Image 1 (cartoon, rainbow, N blue to C red):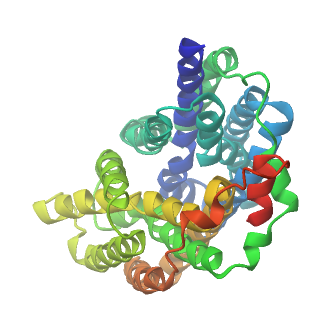
Image 2: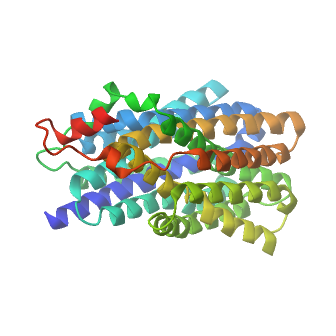
Image 3: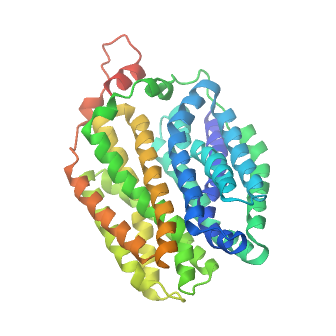
Amino acid sequence: MNSTKWVVAAGAALAIVVAGAFSTLAGLLVGPLHEELGWSRSAVGLGSLVNMVVYGATAPFAAALMDRVGMRKVAVGALGLVGGGALLATTMTAPWQFILYWGVLVGLGTGATATTFAATVTERWFVARRGLVAGLLTAASVVGQFVFLPLLSWVIDAWGWRAAAYGLVFAVAGALPLVYAAVRDPEPRAAPVALHSLRNVNFLRSGPFWLLAGTFAVCGASTNGVMWTHFAPAAHDHGMPTTVAASLLSLIGIFNIAGTVGSGWATDRLDPRRLLAAYYALRGLSLLALPLLLSATVDPPLVAFTVAFGLLDVATVPPTIALCRAHYGTGAPVVFGWVSAAHQVGAGSVAYVGGAVRDVFGSYDLVWVGAGVLCAVAALLSLVIDRGSIDRGRIDHGSTRPATAQVIDRV
């Protein structure tokens, strides 16, 4: 049993890595689709908007589906969706097809293999070392999203964007049998917490939820929405090769890991609200400075920005989860799933608006400034959130009702 759970975690990590590579490829497709097919950047951005919204909205429902049919079927089905969407994308001739193939199909698949999948594997298979496993699976997502970017960028430069899409399809084909063999559910399966929560969403009427959702929407807007989608084309506008810009994004991904681990350590010791305020404020300042740093070459100030942004990028996750736990107890993972949906709505909105701004003004400068201002707003909102108490979410052990149902009812 002990070895089995680590095999399951390894299979889940493989699925997360492969699906994660699809999450950031769209940022490398903006220029090629504009140049080859003549699509506007806002049209490509609309596909990214749909992708990110579908990604975020899928997570809670994917968790419910895992409760009903099992993790293996959902993971394999999700990989099939991303592979099928990428394969169909190679035949595109109109923007609506990008919206359908990449926005909907790839969005569904990547959303089903995101944070909710990692949380479900951790919850069902591990009692000790849950934090370690959750951190490792989060790191797997970062690896998929950033580490392969330079390789994908090189493939696009050498053989075109379709070759990169085919490469990811082959990666899915290779991963599918391994994921099928490794990922499984323990017997008996856990109680259907996520499924129950879809019918019991009283937390939507609480102020802390909307403050957390609002700040996390800004998090998505200032990371996935602006950096993952528009950094590479913005750097290219300044004469920087796309492969070099992709390498900088990979460097951000490497420092994401250190930033997340360090933020988790700090969250255990400091007020998470103040940590969030500091992270958003510093991120906003870095984004405001970026238009002054972009050039055709990589110099020390731009490297410093890359390191700083990497440390701040995913650092918001531990304190946000901590605040969810403080207000909603052991129902926090469910609530965090819905907060994550807000993250993707913010990301998708800025992905679309950023492309439209570039089409109208011929520059991304206003996009960086706007994202910086949003971060300043999020910093202020973070300080308004009530700190809450873990006591509010504790289970009444004297009740005869299932513990999971008690928690969800309180949420």
